[in-house]
Amino acid sequence: MSGTSLDGIDGVIVRFSNEGLPQLVASHFSSFPTPLAEELLSLNAPGSNELERLHLCANKLSRLYASSVESLLQEAGLDPTSIAAIGCHGQTIRHRPDLGFTSQIFNPSLLAELTHIPVVADFRSRDIAAGGQGAPLVPAFHNAIFSSDHAHRAIVNIGGISNITFLPVNSPVLGFDCGPGNLLMDGWVRRHLHLNYDRNGDWAASGSVNLGLLEAMHDHPFISMSPPKSTGRDDFHLDWLDSLPVDLIDPVDVQATLLEFTSRCIADSLNQHCSAADEVYICGGGSHNTHLIQRISALLTTRTVQTTEVLGMPPDWVEAVAFAWLARQTMLKLPGNLPSVTGASGPRVLGAIYAS
Figure 1 (spheres, rainbow, N blue to C red):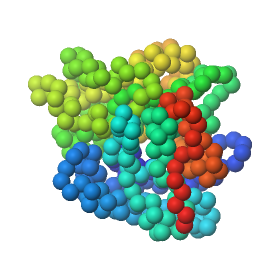
Figure 2: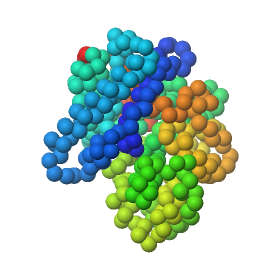
Figure 3: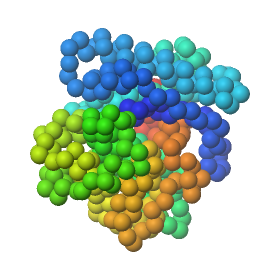
Figure 4: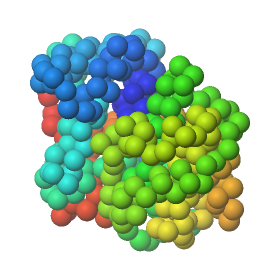
């Protein structure tokens, strides 16, 4: 899994059984080389010679995915014949369900060739073809492993984008993107402090929230949309942020306001669409941002906020495990989407299989 944050590749080996949680056999993170991250970021916007740049970048990315697979196999002491399939999401460069398409780039044929393992890819397109958003897809996995028969639970994944899965007892699952997660905060701290992220949210915590800027952020049309909805860098990016009056505000106060924006997008979405949730569990890279979690907790005074660690799944690896689960669904010819989440016209088997 490589997500909107553009920090690198989360890889896992997962063993599934018909009972209990999936077993995390091995995990590995590898950072993106800076030139690759910059090229991937540039492909999120129109540019010259896009087609050739896209395919060259896809091949580079696929070789990094293959290296991640090799590291995982070495860590677990396994060989390729032990693996049923690789589920690989690819890197999203455009997500436009309103126009009927989404684009996640890598070269699945090359990955299958390099690893000698079947590859399952292109998970989102079939849901969009069926009238859905194509995202978020992880709620189906959350429902499979985190649902409870006694508590209404909400799972909040904070990656580059933040998304929520609401798992009510004996009712349809709800899931949707609620706004930016880390991507704007990461981009702003990279611009001003030349760091990849704001560790623990310390820089944001040292600033003051600018209420005028916060109100301007909330004017983004995505925020007031009702689910099903999904978003990405097409909607939230530094050019959008620069269109707001940030040049009149101290950069540290902009960072504080960005963190508050993410916190409120999550809290407001939970209060508006998941008001019955008794328990809130956080996963994704944002679970390490201490100040962010404190702000979300403060805004959700009547609910307990914990990470998915207490449910038996380390928060850093939930999304990668989810795409292993989605690949398994594809191999077993079982649906991987939830129409109540994406708005698709029905359950669909997702993905395409590239044989080894």
